Length: 179
Image (cartoon, rainbow, N blue to C red; front, side, top):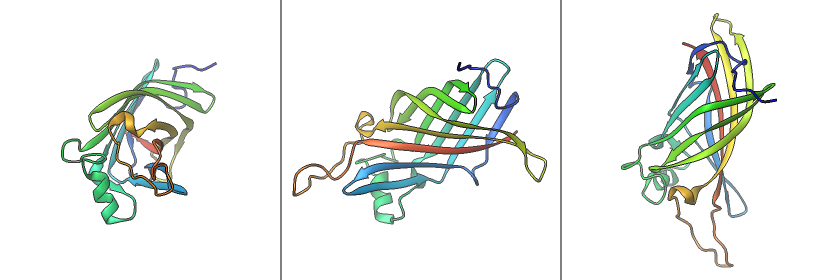
């Protein structure tokens, strides 16, 4: 039975290890998947004996799809609108565990629009690294409809249909160090 008691991590504040963490996305595009990631992210996990909270930020200017012109298009008003909305945000005050399976409920804010979402994944139990620091991890995923957040740009295909799908898979592999 799931519990909101965060047994996977000792109580305390856990700061993101940005070197080993990734926040990426994928969206159906033509005959494949258009993929990218955000390089500048922050996250914090607060654990008490009763509950855990998770918060994070991804800076839009750090979006990377391995092509400079496409990065610029994603930062434009057609998509994230970096000038008016420089960050994507996520906050969760409910983290349920069932073994190493984790179910996180929270809010995501993209382009100034906030929606409730559910994120699922696995928790990686605490371990001590070679430098004596305690580490834990969360591998999380969810899917959102980009049009719910005003990311409506698309292109008609000559054969009918659209070039870009609406469902965006978001994957976060977050590794934390005890603060």
